Image 1 (cartoon, helix red, strand yellow):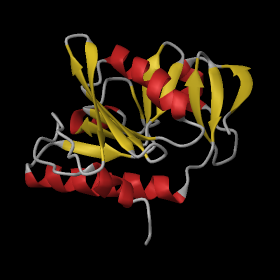
Image 2 (image 1 turned 90 degrees about the vertical axis):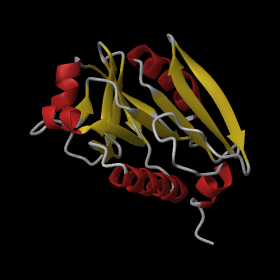
Image 3 (image 1 turned 90 degrees about the horizontal axis):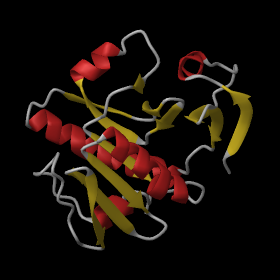
Length: 190
C-alpha cells in the first residue's frame, strides 16, 4: 500500500527531509509518497540484475556505478526512487556529501513491478523517465512474467516486451545475455 504524507515540499526541502524513521518516500508534485517495503523476491531479482551488470561493467572497464533505491529528480517537485540505476562516476561524484538523488538522467533504470507499483512503474515513471531522456528503462514484471525493454529513440521510448526464454537485447549492455526466465527465477529460493 502506498500512502501520501500531506504536506507540500519543494525539491530542496525533500532532499533535507527526515522524519526520524527509516521510511522511504518519493516526491510527487510536492507531496511525499510513502513507499512500502519490497518483497524478498523483489530484492533477489534486483540483486541478480545488479550482479550481472556490475560484472559486465568490470569486464568492459566502464566508468559506471550501480545504485539501489537512489532517487532521480523527474520534475520541478518530483523525485522517484529507482530499484536500480546505472550512472557514470561523474554523476556520482557531483553528489558526494549530499542525498543520493540524481538530477541528470542515469544511463539505465530498472524497476521491478510489485502489486502496488503497477501504474507507477508502467505509466508514471515511464513518462517521467522519458521526459528526462533516460536512454534505457527496464520494467521487470514478476506478476505478469514479462520484461519490458524501453529504449529512447528520437523523442520516444521504443518498447519490446519479452517473455520466457527470450533474451533481452540491451543497447547499454549489448553483451549481457539474460533471458526473462533467468531474471524471474532469481526471485525464488528454490
